Length: 403
Ligand code: CTP
Ligand code: MG
Image (cartoon, rainbow, N blue to C red; front, side, top):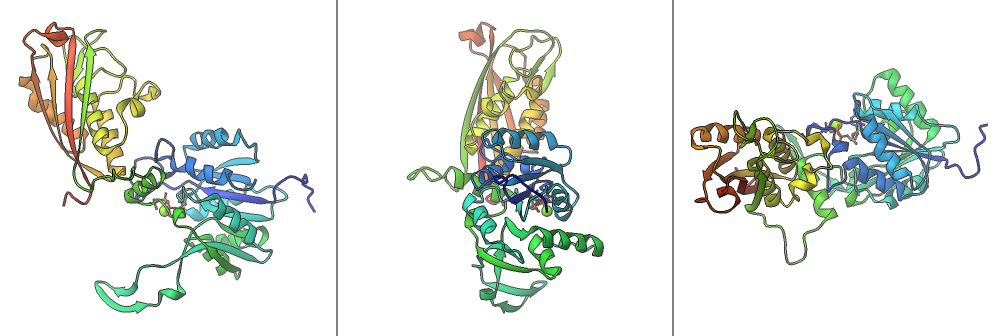
């Protein structure tokens, strides 16, 4: 028998966060996707750390172990729980297997939790842990609300009795020994199951259910991400988010100064004086980013690309705009068009207008961009040749409204 300190928790939670998030399509693993300035993983961990103390085993996306460990460490600094990071595998089942290998002595109950269920209330985690017995597993599940049909192709074959069905969530909790035995068996047979309860049941284990919670939904698609954002920051009463098109405005000013060539409107301008600023000083691109973020209600350029993000120092318009387009897509918006105008004596723009519009449009994934330039009749700082002033207006549409 192993001896553990009297205060050591006997429950462990394996948080699987190693998936790539193909259906979300954010270009980074789903766990690292930003919901509201905090990632999916951060929210999942906050739910866990609000529950009773447990050994936390975080299964990280391959190549992103450090980012996952930093997030865990940051939260755990206030708790000082036992915490371990392991690297995930190609399938969810392999990721859970990796987590199981990190279980220490004294653990009797194991919870397995999807990081993708980022807003799971801590009460659900505690309820599952408390309901596990020495011989039965427990899952949280919700009644099925939709009327269900059995179909073959486009033919509706029959109605399915939904009263005998339930939608499974996580965390799913199990007695440790039987869960390890069930995973060892699955490894031998090569069976792949979509959740731990199915794998446990296939090995002959009993599983019971307790009530789930709507907030424990799994973030799978961009619409789910938007649902999470709305739950975290509901629109003010009386100011519901419009369902139709939304516009945004952005402005930017940069002074001429510094070394090298000018970068403006996504193009390099040889032998023109550059604009100074964090990144390349491309005020046209920066005003566009603000207009797009503003239209989608996603904050502003300083928040997402400012000096706190050194990875964007020296970046050009294509990087800013592509990232912005992806953020809008994740939030459920398509870009209608962006119109931008700069005031300045230089560069002489008209000869390269089409080239600039094509470059900016391409960076936004093909959205329509129009750019114009004007002088100010010698008035103000643009007229004195001190810098450039830009105004951009963007139109965005809820995705689905674009046909
Ligand atoms: N998961 C994992 N390792 C994998 C696959 C999935 O740890 N190889 C985790 C995910 O990180 C997620 C949970 O299992 O927390 C549920 O998986 P799912 O929602 O399908 O996430 P992804 O596989 O990342 O998404 P997709 O299927 O769209 O690629
Ligand atoms: Mg998956």
